[in-house]
Length: 65
Image (cartoon, rainbow, N blue to C red; front, side, top):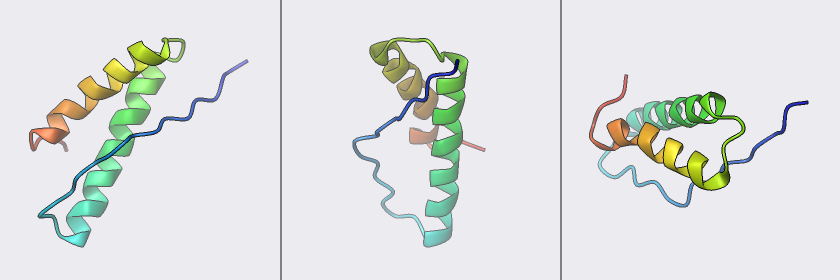
């Protein structure tokens, strides 16, 4: 049986982005979080939080797809 997980991100700043860029950024964030959760479905909350943080780092530095 697969356990459903709900992930709550406390805050994200998308300052200086156009509405279209914000939509793209949010889609990239969703993909990164989904990939982190999928890669470690049985991880503890703390480990999962670290995985998500690591997945979001490239986006925070202006990376992404």
